[in-house]
Amino acid sequence: MNVVVWNEYRHEKENPAVKEVYPEGIHETLATFLREDGMNVKTVTLDEPEHGLTDELLQETDVLVWWGHKAHEEVKDDIAEKVKQRVLDGMGLVVLHSGHFSKVFKKLMGTGCDLKWREADERERLWVVDPTHPITEGIGEYIELEKEEMYGEHFDIPTPDELIFISWFEGGEVFRSGATFKRGRGKIFYFRPGHETYPTYHNEDIKQVIKNGVRWAKNKNTPTHVYGNHKPIENLDK
Image (cartoon, rainbow, N blue to C red):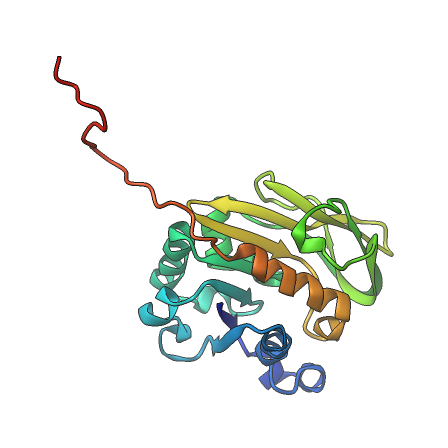
């Protein structure tokens, strides 16, 4: 299973508080626990040529994990369009935290993907609302995070195909924090937690959800359909 973790890798270079939490970058933290789960993982970042997302790399990628925040507009439109097309062709996509505002996610959703937010060191409780889903395997009724950034409704996304988690925050807001979508032959999982100044990606339950989400998003060799004008299967001669 070939996984690529994409990260802006800006906060870790510019903010000592973030570097302390993720000294090798958020991408390497994510890659480490995915590798421990037996996945073949590569990491690429925004400032590499083509943002690291070459045609060759994307063609061999089963699932792309995306973390972005402060530099969404620096992602070139043609690269975002190329990633979108790979999802339509069957590549899985796991979008984390502020990746909701990435060009790739917005293109695939077709909406503004906006929301309310607040940084106030609030407790977050992520309730499992679909306990039968493979993404929740190994998780209890809820995940509790001592401190996280608040995201609040309304979340401007299409109605999810499946709603997996709903968050409650100490300040009173709720949020659809885990949702899946199908686009073309590709599967998408959006998972909310992961503000850069908090050690969220060191939490064992959060790691488990992301590992489950990556495995769920991998295409299981489903049929490829042919479109356009088509010759009949049966003999139409009368």
